[in-house]
Image (cartoon, rainbow, N blue to C red; front, side, top):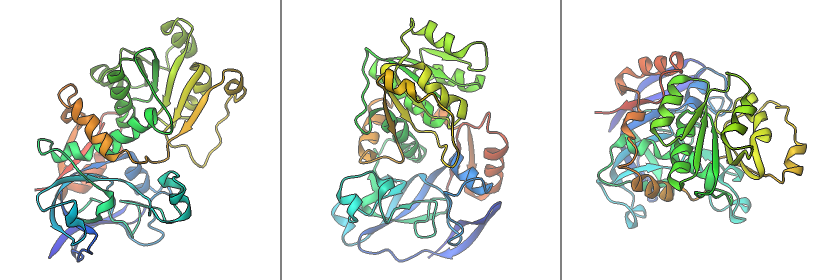
Length: 352
């Protein structure tokens, strides 16, 4: 069977090719892609601004935010899956058997780590079909759309950024979310569901308006006036008990140690690898802060799906997809994701 699949050969060299669909192994499933989100990291790899996409190893198929339907099941995978299951999957693919995996460390520590949609050995969902090992696949509810399934990977990052690696939140907390993009909005929904007072910070008016629809109690434009003073006014001088940085912006990262409350829990999600960010690190000592990184997620796929399903009727996930394109219009979709970043919250590819 042949399928149309996109391959990123290098910066700005994305080609749709017709290829033979690989035969699945006993521990794999064949998925007919239903919907795939275009992530900011896909854009950065396409533009040659990120080393995460490993086209230096060979052309690869992007797409790590996806929902689809199983159309073939390997002999071993049949114990957990069947044809017709709606599914999504993990992005960071830990092997589970290397010494660091057996130590129980994060998937990003795996000595044989792969990332679906970023490497030739783990092709993603910019194609009509994809082959995935069962250990990385999760069922989604039948009443969900494929686009809902494509949001699981993004939502898991915001969810894990608050609850992962020993994090927690409840209604007694003040949560400050820096960045109102897809991950920041996911973290906002998690914080709001806990009952915490939730403050979202973003310089873009459209993202602040969206945050108010997805659980924010207050939104703040960091470019207007004294940002620290605003935060302290909003929190009665307390600061944020839970501060989650979702933008990767240098100024936002540096501000974390000013706006976090004493004994605050600080979660770093936004990517800033490869550059130094000046911060007043001494405040982490005297304010007894708890700082957690979130490079990928661990064991949160199924939890994320259950969480999203519990709030499915409370928040309009479909409305988060601001732009829809058929896969045949992939290059037009990429152009929107690249050049309309301020308004394209999530560009979703749909497959017939």
